[in-house]
Image (cartoon, rainbow over all chains, first blue to last red; front, side):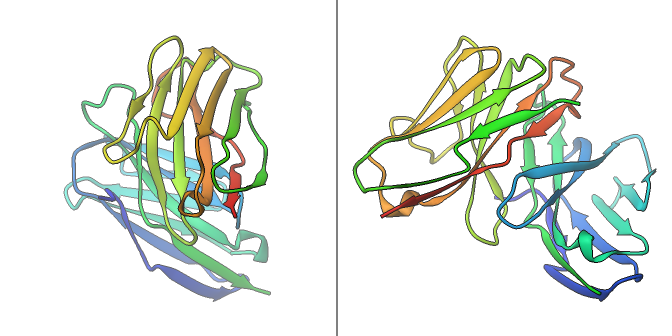
Length: 113
Length: 117
């Protein structure tokens, strides 16, 4: 079964608006990662946040992690049409050695010009 | 940065034939590679973990005789779909773990769209 559950499943916004996606997970983790996938393409690593971190920034991306609630959020500020893609969270679990990733179901983001 | 090349990007084959997908780490040595399967508008499901020089570890429910994985060198892992059937049609993606093993050294290939007719 999927570890991560993203919501919303789909999000449609206008350029310039902010997009927030959430991810919940079930087990203890070493880290949580966010990936982007354009239609029919591979995954691009966006950002990783470790279990002892609460917030991380990278350009227009802001990720938060609340281990007590087993949840994370990805905020994309000032969205652009080029941000249109599917976004997945993936968790690396505690005790799994090199941490195989377990992916959530993803959020499809559509940014309209 | 680390680059993983996956080939072919798409393939169409007839039922009953076998298809080989290659995953290469171009600028680093990958002791561990992962193979995922993704159905349309769904998430990635881990199929197997491939370790250089040893047998792959398959996830529950994945037929090892159907999805043959070979990781004969530190830069190449292959997935062979044997006796392919239409239900094997899917998007297959590989990823490689860089030797740092810090958990954030994952690089993904661009995927292979397999269509079995």
